[in-house]
Amino acid sequence: MRVDSEICVPESHRDLLDAPFATLATVGPGGGPQMSTVLFLASEDGTVQLSVNATRQKARNLVATPRVALHILDAGEPSRYLELRGDATAEPDEDYVFADRLGVKYGGLDLRDMDRPGEQRTVVTVNLTRVRAVDMREPGTVGSSLNR
Image (cartoon, rainbow, N blue to C red; front, side, top):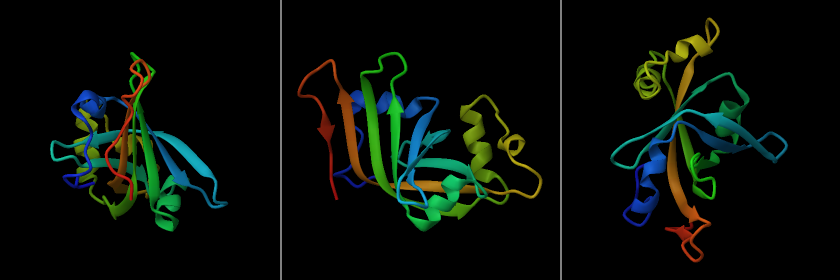
Protein backbone atom coordinates (compact mmCIF):
# COMPACT_ATOMS: atom_id res chain seq x y z
CA MET A 1 0.00 0.00 0.00
CA ARG A 2 1.48 3.27 -1.03
CA VAL A 3 0.27 5.67 1.63
CA ASP A 4 -1.55 8.74 0.39
CA SER A 5 -0.73 11.85 2.44
CA GLU A 6 -4.22 11.60 3.92
CA ILE A 7 -3.86 7.92 4.85
CA CYS A 8 -1.24 7.12 7.42
CA VAL A 9 -0.64 5.27 10.63
CA PRO A 10 -0.38 7.83 13.43
CA GLU A 11 2.92 8.06 15.26
CA SER A 12 1.22 6.76 18.42
CA HIS A 13 0.71 3.36 16.74
CA ARG A 14 3.60 3.11 14.26
CA ASP A 15 5.42 0.71 16.58
CA LEU A 16 2.71 -1.87 15.85
CA LEU A 17 3.95 -2.07 12.27
CA ASP A 18 6.92 -3.97 13.74
CA ALA A 19 4.64 -6.50 15.47
CA PRO A 20 5.33 -10.13 14.61
CA PHE A 21 1.83 -11.05 13.43
CA ALA A 22 -1.38 -9.59 12.05
CA THR A 23 -4.79 -11.06 11.43
CA LEU A 24 -5.84 -10.87 7.79
CA ALA A 25 -9.55 -10.83 7.03
CA THR A 26 -10.68 -11.62 3.49
CA VAL A 27 -14.11 -12.20 1.96
CA GLY A 28 -14.73 -15.93 1.62
CA PRO A 29 -16.55 -17.72 -1.20
CA GLY A 30 -19.93 -17.48 0.55
CA GLY A 31 -19.50 -13.76 1.26
CA GLY A 32 -18.54 -14.21 4.91
CA PRO A 33 -15.23 -13.32 6.51
CA GLN A 34 -12.26 -15.67 6.48
CA MET A 35 -9.44 -14.83 8.90
CA SER A 36 -5.84 -15.98 9.06
CA THR A 37 -2.83 -15.05 11.15
CA VAL A 38 -0.15 -13.80 8.77
CA LEU A 39 3.42 -12.60 8.66
CA PHE A 40 3.78 -9.10 7.26
CA LEU A 41 6.33 -6.46 6.45
CA ALA A 42 5.79 -2.72 6.69
CA SER A 43 8.26 -0.47 4.88
CA GLU A 44 9.40 3.02 5.77
CA ASP A 45 7.36 4.42 2.87
CA GLY A 46 4.15 3.03 4.39
CA THR A 47 3.83 -0.10 2.30
CA VAL A 48 2.35 -3.19 4.00
CA GLN A 49 2.96 -6.48 2.24
CA LEU A 50 2.31 -10.15 2.95
CA SER A 51 3.53 -13.40 1.47
CA VAL A 52 0.83 -16.02 1.00
CA ASN A 53 0.86 -19.46 -0.53
CA ALA A 54 -0.93 -19.14 -3.87
CA THR A 55 -2.89 -22.39 -3.32
CA ARG A 56 -4.50 -21.40 -0.01
CA GLN A 57 -8.01 -20.10 0.54
CA LYS A 58 -6.91 -16.59 1.46
CA ALA A 59 -5.10 -16.26 -1.88
CA ARG A 60 -8.20 -17.41 -3.77
CA ASN A 61 -10.33 -15.00 -1.72
CA LEU A 62 -8.03 -12.08 -2.62
CA VAL A 63 -8.32 -12.82 -6.32
CA ALA A 64 -12.13 -13.03 -6.17
CA THR A 65 -12.65 -10.04 -3.84
CA PRO A 66 -9.60 -7.87 -3.13
CA ARG A 67 -11.10 -6.06 -0.11
CA VAL A 68 -9.13 -6.89 3.05
CA ALA A 69 -8.60 -5.83 6.63
CA LEU A 70 -5.51 -6.31 8.77
CA HIS A 71 -5.78 -6.24 12.56
CA ILE A 72 -2.53 -5.71 14.44
CA LEU A 73 -2.82 -6.17 18.19
CA ASP A 74 -0.40 -4.80 20.76
CA ALA A 75 0.41 -8.08 22.54
CA GLY A 76 1.65 -6.20 25.61
CA GLU A 77 -1.46 -4.01 25.84
CA PRO A 78 -4.40 -5.74 24.10
CA SER A 79 -6.62 -2.66 24.41
CA ARG A 80 -4.38 -1.02 21.79
CA TYR A 81 -4.50 -2.01 18.14
CA LEU A 82 -4.42 -0.96 14.51
CA GLU A 83 -7.04 -1.77 11.93
CA LEU A 84 -5.90 -1.33 8.34
CA ARG A 85 -8.49 -1.72 5.59
CA GLY A 86 -7.87 -1.61 1.91
CA ASP A 87 -7.79 -3.17 -1.50
CA ALA A 88 -5.19 -5.83 -2.13
CA THR A 89 -3.16 -6.50 -5.21
CA ALA A 90 -1.41 -9.82 -5.70
CA GLU A 91 1.66 -10.62 -7.79
CA PRO A 92 3.56 -13.90 -8.16
CA ASP A 93 6.74 -14.26 -6.10
CA GLU A 94 8.11 -17.15 -8.15
CA ASP A 95 11.71 -16.74 -7.01
CA TYR A 96 10.77 -16.03 -3.36
CA VAL A 97 12.41 -12.60 -3.57
CA PHE A 98 9.84 -10.94 -1.30
CA ALA A 99 9.40 -14.07 0.83
CA ASP A 100 13.14 -14.06 1.56
CA ARG A 101 13.02 -10.36 2.50
CA LEU A 102 10.07 -11.06 4.80
CA GLY A 103 11.90 -14.01 6.33
CA VAL A 104 14.66 -11.68 7.54
CA LYS A 105 12.15 -9.99 9.89
CA TYR A 106 11.49 -13.43 11.39
CA GLY A 107 15.11 -14.35 12.12
CA GLY A 108 15.89 -15.89 8.74
CA LEU A 109 12.69 -17.92 8.40
CA ASP A 110 12.59 -19.72 5.05
CA LEU A 111 9.01 -19.61 3.76
CA ARG A 112 9.84 -22.40 1.31
CA ASP A 113 9.55 -24.71 4.34
CA MET A 114 5.84 -23.80 4.58
CA ASP A 115 5.13 -24.80 0.99
CA ARG A 116 4.84 -28.19 -0.65
CA PRO A 117 6.82 -29.01 -3.78
CA GLY A 118 5.44 -27.15 -6.78
CA GLU A 119 3.56 -24.53 -4.75
CA GLN A 120 4.29 -20.85 -5.21
CA ARG A 121 4.09 -17.69 -3.19
CA THR A 122 2.19 -14.50 -3.90
CA VAL A 123 3.13 -11.01 -2.72
CA VAL A 124 0.05 -9.20 -1.44
CA THR A 125 0.22 -5.42 -1.23
CA VAL A 126 -2.50 -3.64 0.74
CA ASN A 127 -3.61 -0.29 -0.71
CA LEU A 128 -5.10 1.48 2.29
CA THR A 129 -8.53 3.03 2.31
CA ARG A 130 -8.89 3.31 6.09
CA VAL A 131 -6.65 3.34 9.15
CA ARG A 132 -8.01 3.10 12.69
CA ALA A 133 -5.59 3.50 15.57
CA VAL A 134 -7.30 2.48 18.80
CA ASP A 135 -6.23 2.75 22.43
CA MET A 136 -9.19 1.91 24.64
CA ARG A 137 -7.30 3.16 27.73
CA GLU A 138 -7.66 6.71 26.42
CA PRO A 139 -11.30 7.57 25.62
CA GLY A 140 -11.71 9.75 22.56
CA THR A 141 -8.40 8.75 20.96
CA VAL A 142 -9.77 6.37 18.38
CA GLY A 143 -8.45 7.73 15.11
CA SER A 144 -9.48 7.14 11.54
CA SER A 145 -7.40 8.82 8.90
CA LEU A 146 -9.58 8.22 5.88
CA ASN A 147 -12.64 6.35 4.76
CA ARG A 148 -13.22 5.72 1.09
